[in-house]
Image 1: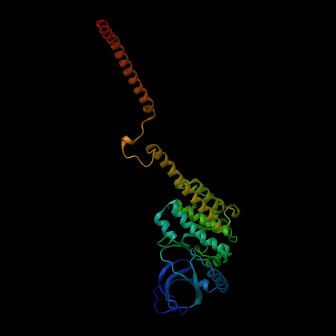
Image 2: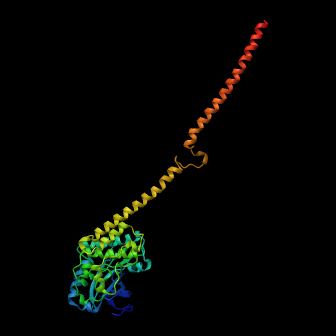
Image 3: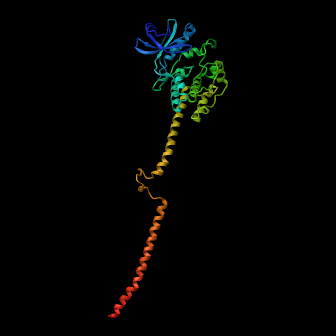
Length: 358
C-alpha cells in the first residue's frame, strides 16, 4: 500500500484511503471514506513487521474487540478492524482538529483553567476504560485529539496494550512507549496499571502548564532512569501562576510508587474537578470581598445616591449643629429679657404719673 492517495483500491473492500493524516514508527494514519456507510473515517495501517507476527495479530484482534466496546464522548470510537493486503488495519471515528501535542507547541504554557478542562476530559475517557478493565499504556499528547470546540478524545486504546506485550528488543524507539511519558514501573519493564496512566496524565499536565517536560534526556534508556530515580523540578518554579495546591496534585501523580498516586484516572479527574470548583469559589469570594465594602462605604443607603446633598451629614456635624442652635437661642432670650426688663420701670413710671395727675 503506497503512501500516496489511493482513490481506486478499497481496503477491506470498503474503505477508500484519501490522504495521510500522520505517520509514526508503528503505523500510518489515513483519512478515508467508508463507501458502505458513506462517512469519513480514520484508518490506521500497522507496519508490515507487526502484521507478519501471528502472535501479534491474535493479540491485536482481542484488544481491538475490547477497545471497540468503549463508547464514551472522550474516547475515539473504533468502528472496524481487519487484515487486508498483508497488513493489519483499524478503522476509527474521524475527529477534525489537531492533537494535543500541536497545541502544546503552539501555546507553550496553557492557562490553568484551560489545561484543567482538557486533562479532566482525558481523565473521564481513560477513567471509563479503567472501569472496563482496560489500561491505555501509552497516554501521551499525540494520542489526544482536540476538536475546534475544545472537545478532547483519547485514541489508540487496544494497540498500545498489544505493543506493550512485545519484548523490549523488538520495539522501536516510538513503540517502546513514548519514553517522555511512561511511568517508572513501565520503565522497569513491569506490567502497566491504571496508576501508570495517571502518571502519564500528570506528565502531560506538567508539560501543559510549564511548557516543559519533567525530565529531559537523549534517549529511551536515560528517560527510563530519570522516571525511576529523579524527582521533577517544582512546576511553580517554571510557572509561578500555578496554584500551590495544584502543584501538590501534579507532584502526587508523579510519585515513583503507583500506590502513592491517585489509583485511577477517575479519581484524578475528581480531584481536579474539586480543585477547579474550589478555585472558582475562592475567586468569587475574593471579588465579593472587594466589592461589598466599597458599596457599603460609598452607598450606605441603597439605592445609589445621585446628588451630593443627599449624602447624610457626618457624625460630628450632627453633634455640633444642635449645640450651635442652643447658643443662639440663649443669646436671643437674654437680649429679649434685658430689653423687656429695661422697659418695665419706664412703663411703671408712666402709669404712676398718670395716677397722681388724677
